[in-house]
Length: 215
Image 1 (tube, rainbow, N blue to C red):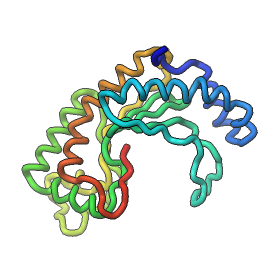
Image 2: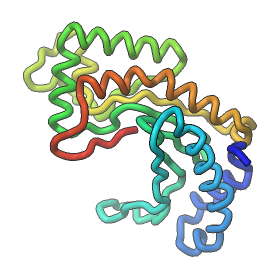
Image 3: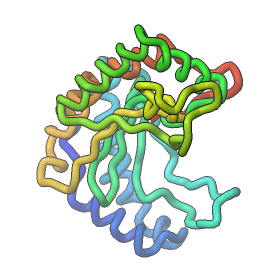
């Protein structure tokens, strides 16, 4: 049987986890997580993979080593599909694409490409196309001032200040989340967001220092 959305019980699971983020809750509801949450995500990503690329579903456990919040479990399930990201939680569905956090060498290449008129204008056109389609493009962790070496009055100063760049879409809880329509909406987003991934791949590329976080 193919992907047919997330059942109401998946929302109930995350509602409960947000109220009681504990090992005892998780253990008591692990079977529900497997069937109502992980199962649909596995089917969805398997169906998206032939068009968009390799799949990685993230583990449900939080890394609490350096966090003041010691809650052990994530309150949503996320997965990478090629260059795209999809997430389901009690708040609804979200999808993203781009580079969430660039390493220092990537930031340098990104800013150089943004500053140059040819590649900078290309990125502006890509962003305009995505936003006209109804999706958002966000800069991540922007500096409050102009980055060193760039003028504060540069025509693309807002883009230059970013340390990451992502296309992003959120859908609130709606009845279609429990139908196969989820796949169509995520696939449409990935297709429209693809140009920003291509621009980043062509002009920023992978880090020589560390793996960038894509989302």
